Length: 147
Image 1: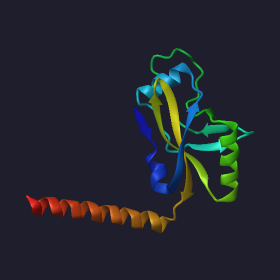
Image 2: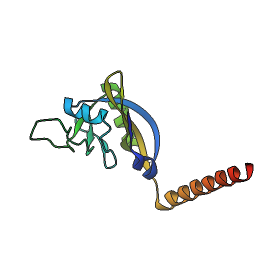
Image 3: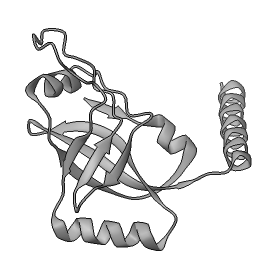
Image 4: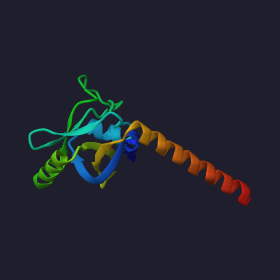
């Protein structure tokens, strides 16, 4: 199961994605494996030499009995210290943001794909949307006249 952050690809120019583990409770893991997570408003922040996934919405697992649960709590990402130092220096050099691109499972472990995002201007978004529509129309016309 792979849950993607489609908003990140639309609003940002993504570069250099990397993989990070994430600290979750058992109920959160089950919720993610059942496909229930939302990364659209989430971002990654460096707090005290640690990476944190902030504002990711992982709803309560429906069979979980615990009463106090915050679906938007911050979750620690597991990355080596040397990588965190490199990430921090890259963020300070350029005007970039760390964004979660997707959440997926590999060999029973939940991983988060994180990438550097540079914000797109409104006119860039519109131009990209027009290009995509033109390509879609061209493919439709090709299929229509090839048959």
